Every structure is written in C-alpha cells, then in structure tokens.
Image 1 (tube, one colour):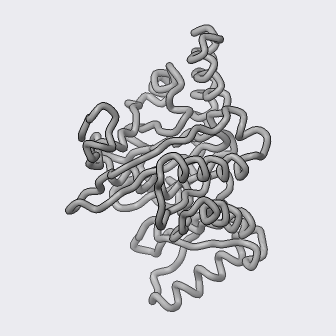
Image 2 (cartoon, helix red, strand yellow):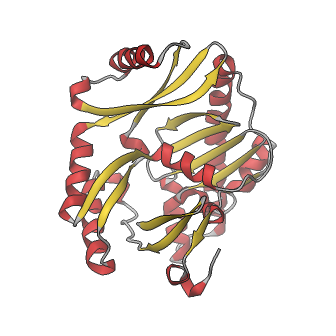
Image 3 (spheres, helix red, strand yellow):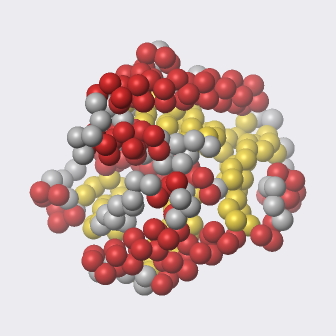
Length: 289
C-alpha cells in the first residue's frame, strides 16, 4: 500500500507499508480472507487512512478487446453497451464493468472491456471500509500494469511487451506508441514463487530453479507468439522489440535469460521506481530517486 501525491508532472511516493500473503494463498481460494487480514494489519500498524484506489487481481477480471467504428461519442457508448452485453458471459446486473479506448485506427477504435463479478468487487470494498479506508476506484490489475509502464522512462524505442507474472495469472501487455493490447493468461508464477520462497529458505537446489525458469519460459513463449499473431492481424501490431518483466514470478532466477534465448529480444525488469519520486522518510535507509 502506498500514499502518492502529484509533484509537478511526476508522482511522489510519500509513504508505504507492506503486508505479505502466505505463499499458498493463491491455492486455497482464501484471497479475500487474506486481503481482509492484510488491510486490517496495515491500518493498525501503519496508521494509514483515507480514500484508496483498489487494484483487483487479474484472475478476477475479465478483459475483452472489441472493435468499434469511428462514430460520435453518444453512438459509441451505445455500441460499447451492446458489445458488453454480448461479450461478457454474465448478466450485466451481476457484474461491474467499464471500458477504455486501447487504440485509434483509421478504420475505427479498439475498445477494452473490463468486468468483474459484483460480489467480488463488493466484498473487496467492504474489506477496505472495515479497515478504515474509503474506496474511490477499483482498477483492474492489467490497467495498473499499463499505468506503471507509462510512468517508467522508456528503455528504448519500439514496441514493448510487459509480462506481469502474478500468483495465479499472467498479464501480457503489448504497448506500441499510444496504443496497447492485452491478454490475461490463466496461469501465473505460482510455481516460480514457491521456488523463490524455497530458495530463500535454503530448501531447493539451483538446478530446480533453472528447470522452473526454462519450463515457465517455454510456456510463456508459446502464449506470446499466439498473442502477437492474434493482434497483428486486426491491429497491425509490430512484434515487440524488447520485453519487461514484473510481478512476483519475475524474480525467478534465470527466467529473463531463458526468455531472451527463446524470443531473441532483450529481456529486462520493469523499474517502476525510476518513474516516481520517493520522499526521504518513505525510502528504506533514506534512499531517494
């Protein structure tokens, strides 16, 4: 949890606090229970209060890209409403949903629909309110990843693929100039996270970590290839010139090297802190950016 303020054209981190979930939290459907406990602990320990933006994990969010013709705003809203009713596999009364323009082409728009079950969103807001926070916005994790990337100074020219390796899902975010395409994969870095935790405890050998990195890289490469080909046809997307990793699974030793070997493009880490200012009293050891 972080406290941010605008400082000119940049974002400034004023304060933060961290509460870790159990490593097995993603495997026993106790995500909400652990979230409630974490929020209560943060409120008590860090004395943070006030309005909050909540980020909903990618595995709880349905995203879908739809194409819309270049029409007036009022008509576009009706088209998006129709596409939501057709493309979201639940009654719209049972979900919360919104949309954002992902790209503008000469022949129309690509619109991202994002939806979550109303029960999940309501429970998350209730957990935040019970801990003393006032939810103002729920942001899907893939869009939070996009916001983080846009805050980060560009590593080089050309289209970028950002991989956010969560516990239960992986976000593939393709960004090129002012447009983006994204896809959520139904697997995450859970095995990688267990490898990391075991290595920190001294319980696993390096060979096991290397095998995990190669296996994850192979699976990701297949999905990346499919995704780029899928979006290349309707959107004219250029293959990524480089890849940035983030999320818990990105810490897996050897993963960046394994992906570099398979994708034949540079692979690095998404340095979110490079794009924000950090208050002296918020940085460990007085470090600043």
